[in-house]
Image (cartoon, rainbow, N blue to C red; front, side, top):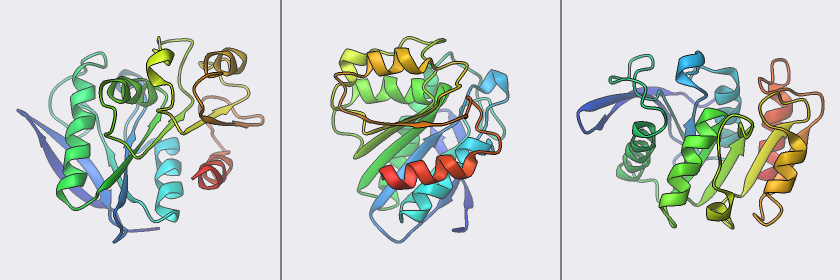
Length: 201
């Protein structure tokens, strides 16, 4: 495991609590956690699995808490302000010398990441969604064509219907990996998720 250092990122009036691990290379990833109002934070098991997978591929990793979570100031903003949190995290990585920034979002984090990916054409070198919660949120799939590289989902996911996902992403050109017997939370299957991501990266 690469050592993670706690950093605080300025985002306008807000401060975003983050954990940074540097690889010495030019590639980095911003990792977005699940729903803040449902206990989601950067300490989530899936977020930690994502971090491990990218670190193994020599990415610098930046996990952070959305506004109002943990040591991040502000309060939950229904996905709007959270987009600005992501943009501040990307800018921070650029400021520390990362020239190729990827983004990996899990659950709510995938939905907010999708909103940012829609807005900016060239911000990310690689985009991964883990368990995008299609059953709960609208994803603007036509706006995401050729912008998503990796989607990972469990075949028993309560919030991401696999058949609906396969239908929606027909024209997206993303690599889809379905993890057998995994649900939305991947408890006990973190290693399967890490291996899937490493393979797709």
